Picture (cartoon, rainbow over the protein chains, first blue to last red):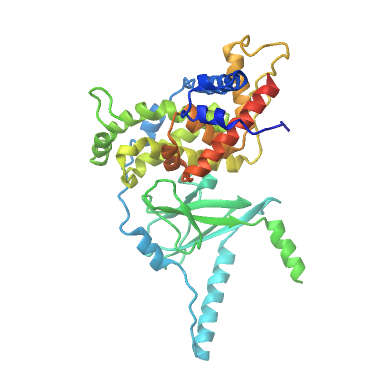
Length: 219
Length: 182
């Protein structure tokens, strides 16, 4: 562990360009020269180019149009706590429906067994009429083609699962190969980095082992 | 950025959004060197940096309509690239710079001035890579890419006082590391 001591404020001012470094004492001038020399060395430009690769990648793409009112749509779609007073008959029917959905999900999801630092992420989205839905995110370098969701019942409910490293992951749904939409059920969102107020969905994968430990504690 | 006779970023963005995809190449040529340097300094690995910049440029093209102020395209591109680097670092978790990438230790008898340029670069890179990512980013944006604190705020999303503190701390750590390494 290196020893780190505060730099003289005068040196900081000179490095910020608000003080003439020539007015610094000799020892601070040496430190100034050392830091600025280091910065100059780091300014060396890499001798590689990704231009051809990028132009090939975007050859068949077109810039996407801005989604109309994404914040409003997300606000409308964001889940909220709602209290429903249901008659017993409706309650039974609803419970039966949910059980069926969970059963189908469980049967149709054949997820590989996660490792000690992995967990299973379940993705569900409602996209009636969609021809395809897939998930891109920080876990697959935002590349399409690796995580497709399924709609076996043709009811517009697309679902799928993936084993991911434990921890936070940003993601989006890609509908019909071209429409990128956040997950309205994600609950958590982070700035997408494009500066236009857009957000990526955020999921936090818990390690499968931790889930098992929690289950064991509950018993 | 407006060069002699060259179209401005605003003009090029308008051309691309109007359907002239090839015009995006102008922006690549204009900003690729700096973005590659920034990503290389952030990731400490030229191959990973090339991947991060390529992915960032493709994302920038795809989402170009979301760039609210094309006159500040440079900040926007650095922001996307910085986010890609952060994602990469988060996945990497631990410092996985291989021994072959690590520069050789300088002999204690060498003076700073006597070191060859290549050795000096390697030494400084090593000291830079020892900094936490936030401080490394702040130092690189300020002293390598030559940005103002205002532009750094646009790139990182952090507040200016926070960025000043990161730069100050980075300088202190870098100076200490350089004194220890040389």
